[in-house]
Image 1: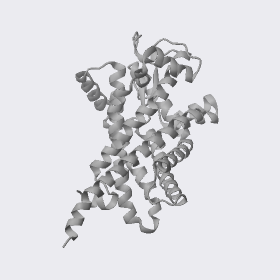
Image 2 (image 1 turned 90 degrees about the vertical axis):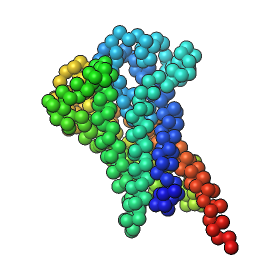
Image 3 (image 1 turned 30 degrees about the vertical axis):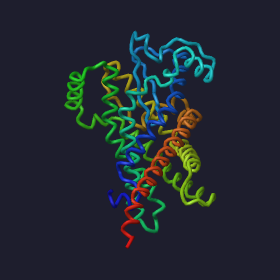
Image 4 (image 1 turned 90 degrees about the horizontal axis):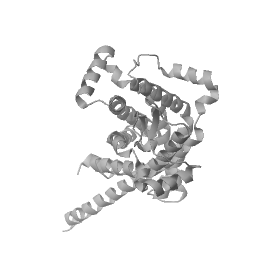
Length: 344
């Protein structure tokens, strides 16, 4: 076993990766049905036309989906008249089967799961390292580690998400996709592959910094309150939900801007129109304020809270549960070795 990893966390980096992977899959299975129902209700109110984009969230990442022309079999175009969220939920299960609640999920997991694994594993490793180096300011380690880990995972995944959207919107083969990417790089430079990276960081880095800081503080306080040295599932679940809610509310304006920007870029790509127009965060923010007033930057407050709080709670509690399992497993394996070495 890696001695450094065992000394710091009690588990190996591979076990951390497995724990975050398990947590990511569990989170997506719980949260995706909520978003599928929301999208079906949106499609009923305002049918999606060719090239129209919508945001699909699996609880781990937001993905831009482009509507296909003439594809009446697309899951978001399935017929049905719903009177509300609960009616939509039960009607979809009754008419289309329970699997329909996870429509569109598998393709999004190809990027969402690796991104989550990178993010959580980097956070744990960085946080453990910073705590040993920061001494008197070690309580700030989660804040710095969370922000840094988010920058890393976003930088790795951003080009892949842009390519996925382009591939879906323009129905490109892998060969055509390569030509398309090469053309974009030649005309706009390599940085064009990271279009949208800045606005994503403006939302996700502050979110991650606040989330991890509040989570670790909340977990520590609850452990003291209930006089336990190891956080229980309930403690991690509550800490994750509360810290996720605080971070979601604080970063809501950046979420509104990022979502609007993603949709506009996706629709331009679907129409094969140049995306060199100005989509800076400041310009998008100005347009939103001009159209809807300052309150437009806080649109979707309740839906975002209802989505983020359970997703954060499920992800972190599942992750911590799996880490605790591996920690105990490692301790049980090490105990016979320690005992035999101390025997005369």
